[in-house]
Image (cartoon, rainbow, N blue to C red; front, side, top):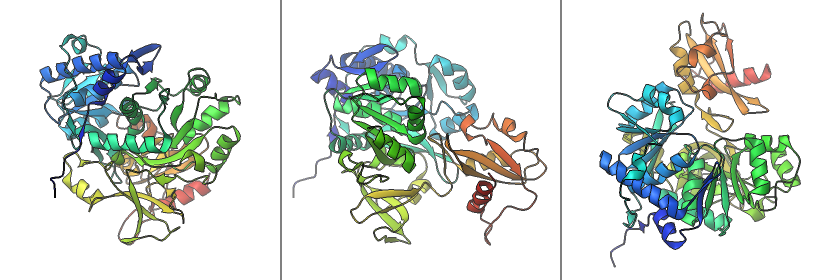
Length: 492
């Protein structure tokens, strides 16, 4: 048999700069970069990074909000051979410091609005660089002509597990490339596609919009932050064809006005967990083509997405697995029957290479090629995936993931907290809000303020209750958060 050839990938920005240099690549805040503009800026930035000493596969952290600068570095760091490591701009300095130390990063690029946070977060030995410095445009451009191996690291995105300890998922060029190809086979690609990115670009859902647009040669329209009225106006006046949001964002868009959202919009991808059926029905009634989708950081975003023709027939489903993903539902080590709820497992070329510097976590999550997601779901008789719940204890609040163990660890560091439990309680605006129960002498009203230096704002409990009795636990001592959740929910 002939020797199997390894897949090589072209630098997608360089490729699109050669095929249609004048086509808009990025639009943000009234500024437009064509593919020729983007390629030049990516080339000079990559050359400057190499001159700084960036070596193959090393993480280069970036702390920035949505804008052209984070997009520049998302393409430039991989061209320089490094791994783009976007940091969640909502995290506290101590949380960012942990990720920088865990990744063994040497460089942290920050935009001016995050310069103080970057300096506070940077451990000894980490060099903080200004993302707007003239040096990024001064070097002779590094071209993107060389082929890239599919398994070469592209990005490192930190995601917390059920232990609450953040881990850096290593995503390769091949992961993103095959994710883009699979999505295009589902949604199609049009020359005039304009994908609106109003989700944070430091999350995989937002980042994938930038990368897919470059792979396709289409346009990414960036909003600095989510503002429902502005999004609605963009859909009506700027020719937006694709939009990615979570359920709470779409709800807010519907609440601000009842006018049609434009004729160019052909798909709204709705992620972030199962959407309420009333929201899906409202979208149907307003003629908004909402497609539920299911994905993870570890799979470079999408695993399954509902095709447009199934939007009404399979209301509530996350759709069929994309062509790059094989999905099975596992129950006690066996494949579940149709309709039987179990753990969602995923295999295919979009599954990440593992967790940075964490062979133990990698071996636990990826077994025999299958990513064990910890999420629960089922497939129906036609193979359509339905999400029964997120990870047992995961709280999804306003599209942000909050892991109870991480918050509980911060609570237990406070004086007077002997025991604690953190759960999500349903909320009309945010989907769920974080609620904590403590046992001990600590003043529950003072707890949120005491946590603000240790945790991002969205992780700080909105409500803290003090119980006098011990928290419910199993015979082996495991905390039964579901019982805490049930009691709190019943009391609201």
